[in-house]
Length: 199
Image (cartoon, rainbow, N blue to C red; front, side, top):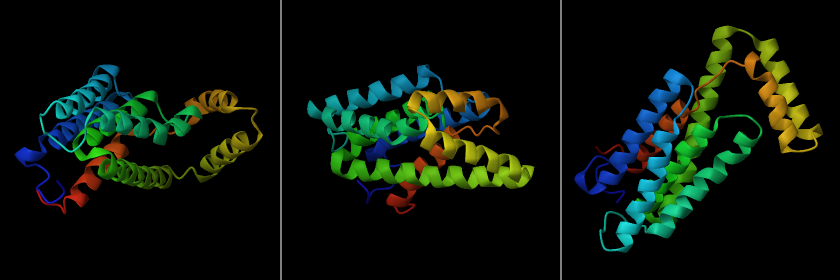
């Protein structure tokens, strides 16, 4: 599958999930929220694709189990950050939808690598964008204080619930980053990379 152009007819499930990720990123940029009416259909249709592959569709190398595994992996990668208030639930479900389709299309073995490295790419892009926002606003002392408070919460709080509560209390002082945008850039960028930028 990696030797075929990313946007080829044979890779139509990849085209579908790319469109879904772009839609999620645009909505997150606009409303700072990725809606359930987009994320849940992405997750469920990825499962349907996997099941259809089990029944002979042959629109990918993965089946229903691979789609479920991709969904779980997408959740596992982001749930720790969500649990401490670092991003919204929509971002987690967006990644679960990506994982669902990628698992169904590439299978467990290849799909695991794509999901993991696409997430890592998105995290790096998010860090770069966040650092750029800090530089643009020149509020280094305020951001350093936020970082100290977050690290202090992680090491001193009695549990994840307390960390999340304190993070939510600080949310009004944060410079918000619609994390669906860097995630989308990471997902699509990594997919282009593994297909050797062959469209």
